[in-house]
Figure (cartoon, helix red, strand yellow):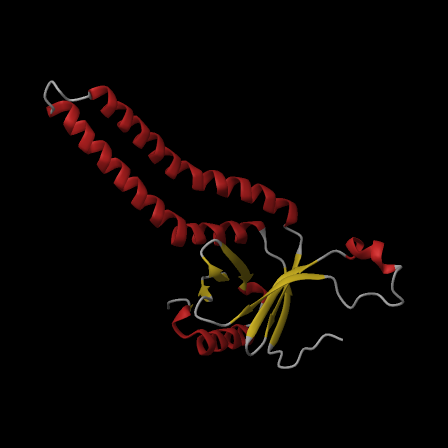
Length: 200
C-alpha cells in the first residue's frame, strides 16, 4: 500500500499546448538566450577585430585566413541564433501529441512528487499476472527540497527545476486560490530564496 503520510496537497491536471509553449519560452529566456547572446557577442567582436586587420593590415597580412575566420564566426553566430528556435519548434511539435496526457503533483513536507499518469491500457499486458489491479499506473520523479531545487512563479504557471536543462510546468489554473496560497507558503518556507513568487 502506498504511503501518503504527511501529504499536504495533491492535484491532477493537464498542460494545454499554449501553456507549455509559454513556459518553454520563459525557460529559454532565463537559461538559454543569455548564454547564447554572450557567445554571439564574443563571436561578433572577433569578426570586427579581423575586419579591422583586413582593412588596415599591411601587405604581410594573411587576408585569406582572416576571411575564413570571419566566415566561421558568422556561421557560429547564426547557429547560436537559430538552434534554440529549432529546438523549440521540434519540441512543440512533439508536445502536441501528448497534450491530453494527465499529470499529478503531490506535495510532501520534505519533497514533491511530479509525473505522468499513464493510460490504463499500457498496463493490460501485466494485469493477468496479478490477482488485483495495480493501485496506479504512474511514472514520476521525486524532487527533494534542497539548494539545487528552484520554483519560479509566473502569471499562469509554476516552473520547477533542479538543473538548467530540465523543468516541470504546473498550471495554476488547476488550483484554487487557497491551494495556490498553500503552495506559495510551503515553497517559501522550504526553499527560501530559491522560490521566486510572482511580483505584484
